[in-house]
Length: 191
Length: 227
Image 1: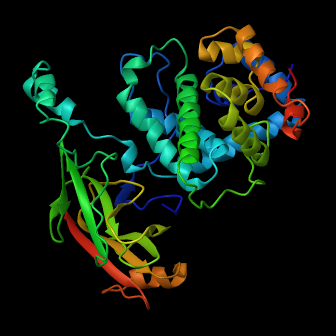
Image 2: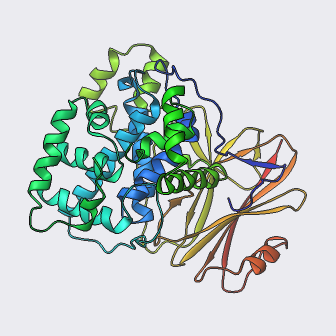
Image 3: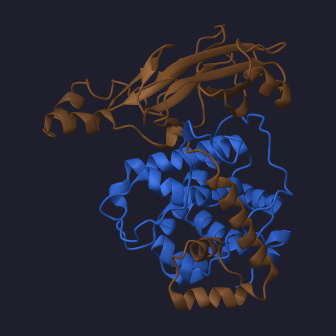
């Protein structure tokens, strides 16, 4: 819909920020989750994926997963944490799948488009290319959460269910693999 | 303190942080232009998001599994049917994971689908629909490059929902759903297929006339009667 307000005779379903129970483990309502967290998921997809169409598809994939696997939400973390991780995993899987297939021409989002990560879009692309080429799944997650999102080692560890030391080690190993060809985005790291 | 993580900025915005953590984050934001700008970006995205409809595909219909469990209350029966290949071979019409039929070379077309209970079916012009009816528009752009979806109610008020690039011939689903309210009268929906992105002013004028005609465009409509 393009107009800011719908006419009285037809009401488009809108995304309004209604309050959502913090203790929602017993029943996750996908529509409520979308209303409250859809922008978080979409922004995440836009940050990690290279074009709008891919991001749109990924948003849908994330919420379908939420619908299918809502039983796995234990309620011991905020839904935002749970969704952030599902979205990240979904995007990384999509990028990996795309790399396995013959490259399809895509209309990439311009690098200068702003987003809320610590790295600019070009740096995110370079980082993901590097990660997808050489690193295992867990290291990819550690590096993305730390370098792209600015989480501390401990925060990453808490999110992934591993120790902060294990996260530090994986990121350190990743850094060592870049020796002699340190890219500009690595300088952004502050921990 | 290093920069604030993206997730934590979201959680601050959503009011999900403990007071002490929120206070620390806000102190950092007062002195860090980068993090303040990142939070500002999130708020802008939120503002834009709030004014968009929920894509119909994000509201999953009950799965065949769910329906069987609900109807028969015998979950034990479902695995047996699945084993026999009878359950998961049945596509759910509203399941967004099921691809819509694509017929190469088909002419442009336009349909309004309604979801009532667990079933989904197309509506035909002249059909009466109840308040609260949830509609999903589907269109086949044929060989046209753009599709504009619009509506006009019984008072003549026109609303243009948006113009989307076509993805070749075949039935496609609009990226939003519509819910009718209780106001009586007709409700027309239009799909205006064009080879170029239409001029908004000309489009608006065309949609106010009957029949709807626009140079170079192919127009399809579904006109419903609200109860």
